[in-house]
Length: 288
Image (cartoon, rainbow, N blue to C red; front, side, top):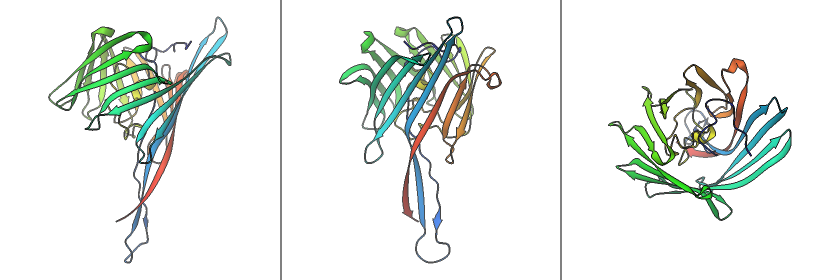
């Protein structure tokens, strides 16, 4: 079984993670008059995510590791087709858990996420269904098939079309969202507990995908619907006087390649989990 992470922030709501990204950079070939200049456009597509969760039991002298891998598969047009999920759990370097799943999705005619399905072979483990009204997410039905349960989250928005509440009575979950001047959710309240977020100014690895699984990576799976796009990367979580920091390493496209999530402040150097992002770069030559 997966051991729970000791930190306040990363041990509550969820089971899983993933996705993709893009950047355009240009280099002009041939100065001055003559043939039309050629611009090389580079697009970064997230191809894999590796995540390691750490925990230990000092009294039992046991160390726990859960290694999670997401492999993203695309069609010939670089549209995401599915994600292959695997996880392996270790106790003192001995394998105690193994799991392989597939993540599938369906988009509606407007390109919005309609269903997200988790499968074990041909067997559905979980399926989420998204419903919209006036181009805004109205509800998400979570059908937890393997667990034999289901619940529906209902969403409300303000006059700026910002999601402000997530009410999932069947899961005893009530979430309120608050935004900063950059239109980022900088605070949210989960069943009365306030959590503050801070961000970098870099690109989210999921920004060019049809959905965003940032919340899955830090175990707030039902707190944020996958339709919500995080515009940047979260650098800290604060609840009351507790702080959990995140450090990033970026590539030349300002996309994260490594994220270290600390249990507490970074100077305490207690790592809760880490994430490695890998990208495939597509180069396209375009005449200007």
